[in-house]
Image (cartoon, rainbow, N blue to C red):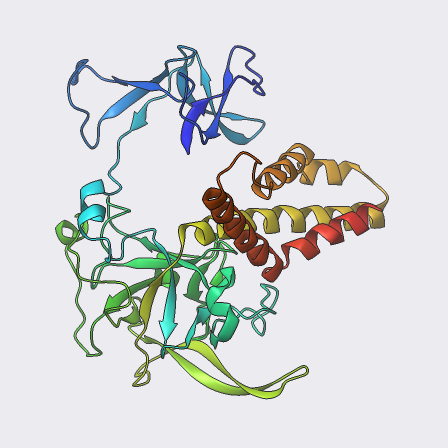
Length: 385
């Protein structure tokens, strides 16, 4: 999608225009000119990493501005100047030449033993240590959104660079937005919210083999784009927790499940020695399911907040706190976006394009159903009624 200067204006500054994302690039709305913010650069020079720049909308001749209104950070196009800094993410050439390689911010699955993957259980909850667990699970979960993770490089300017051996990284769960990590008093792995997800608790690095050698790379070795040596479905990796030096491993439990009986559950933990089969492989996710998983995370957080707010309002018989805690404009906008996200294909599409559209639509619907978002919407309707 393209960064665009929109025709609407929701800011307190009535001369400012909203800035958002749009799929189409036609017209001048998504065109911006780049200007140097300091006298060290002049018009026409190449833009370099680390430069301070100013973006000007071609359509409205206003500056791209970041500001705060009512304690909320917003971005709009106004007559007030904001300086932006150019930071490297990755290079198109590196991705084009090394497509089988794993890059920072890739959305993927950790596959284990060929028929199971790293995931959270369907009954997962952040409320207690008994429900906030990570497991290896097989079957249909290998096509579901709750088994998707994102690798985020922790100490590099190149956030989209290659995933390399010994490079500190964090593992983020897509549908919850939480980080894989450990709490101080336990070796059991769990998901941590952003406030608790310190580097010490959540940083891992990848190893080829288990040994006692502790490798600490210098800053100059971390501040680079890296080399292409970790590949999808090809290289077995072993994850080691940086702070403790323990290995990402598991312990098997016998648990009783409704309508099934006793089943084996492999619960993830950190172990000093680990197991012989602790190695995992990376499986690339489809772009469509990665995008849908991010939509699920946003909807889940928004709808749960709305339901809790409704329950508090009903119990307290006061609308004041509800209106403060719940952004109704955001809720309505989110529902409108969902209507567009699940819209049926247009009649004038060719047969081939129509089939592709319907297949993607069915995949979106399945992912939403599996993650319980449709049930959340029904709960919202039931509470309102």
